[in-house]
Length: 182
Image (cartoon, rainbow, N blue to C red; front, top):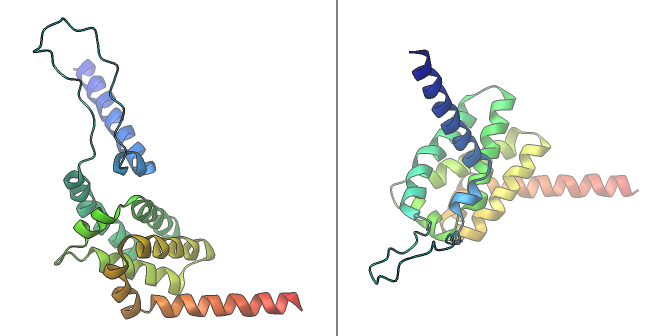
């Protein structure tokens, strides 16, 4: 019985490590690049020989995972009071946004999906209340979202006051810089 539990625990740890690796390096499973095929093993001269498998990015699988994780991370950010948890969820959202491709943005934010609004609400919240580090993450998310889905996100940015908050922060920064230069 203990051998079975140990084997189960090892499998569970391996699965946990794989999930942690995916969350820390989302670009690996979301990139457009196709992994190079392994070198072909020596084949008999038969014409029916199998062809080597090649890993190809599957947008439907990516969108399926994002449909689950984006609302989780935005909800965690909006509903927790712990600064470390807010920072972690914001960092994970930042990684997701960073590695999105424009075609996945369109699929993810298709009509009827609230994800574009949820992401922008999180950004607006960060710009209103969070630290300098959170502001930097939010600004980089705004930049990436504008590059990948300007038409989708600009209405949300205007509606939720993100543009106004960015302008205010830029003006404050310019004033502080001007004062420090004197």
